[in-house]
Image (tube, rainbow, N blue to C red; front, side, top):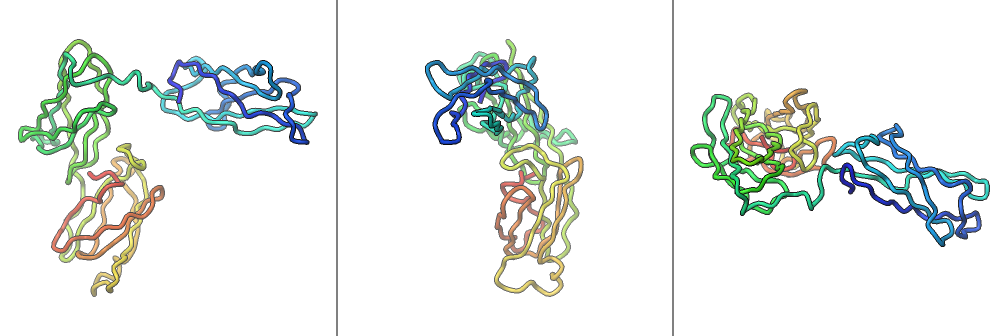
Length: 293
């Protein structure tokens, strides 16, 4: 994975003639790099010295050439051998903002990065897990006053990840820059919106996210169906299966299920996850893959 502003050398698959023998292209192959369906950059293709049919290109993954950090690009090569032209995908480029050498170390730095977690009313929230992405330090839980002691870090850019907290919407990662000073980050969690359950039901709630991440995905579809061996209790027939769509802005969703039954849930992007709705529980976050609120 190249880093933005980095130049890499990409070697292409060897070319062959119709008999399967290695063969040179005539003229030189053409390499195009696509962002979706648009060509953003066409590096010069060179022949590898003392070879037949082997080519490479130096690819400058710079902003000036149209590259952006966090995006995936498709590399295509067009070549003509023995008068026959062909084109195909020869690779992909995932351009990043930083590589492993850029991840700042932590634990013995001279500045303190801490946080305080509150709700919308300004009240502090204890027991919220927070961690620094890519930094080998233990996750910390907020104290009764909503604070974490934080980490001793050096100057640099960090990503603060806020863990799941029942009753609250998943919070996006927070970018933090340490520049010659301590810093305390204030985190405000948004309460999950759901309607209290009717008798015998449990309200399941959560937010739709990109798979295995905290990136919110508004308008995601959530599917659920009962998988218990025993029959659905009288009055619950309409809850055997269904689907809901998360809010177009907040990505929140909720639905009611009979207590004490086993269900499986999926979205349009992740496989089924099976869980049991506990007896006598009237509200619960969807576990795991959906990004608990």
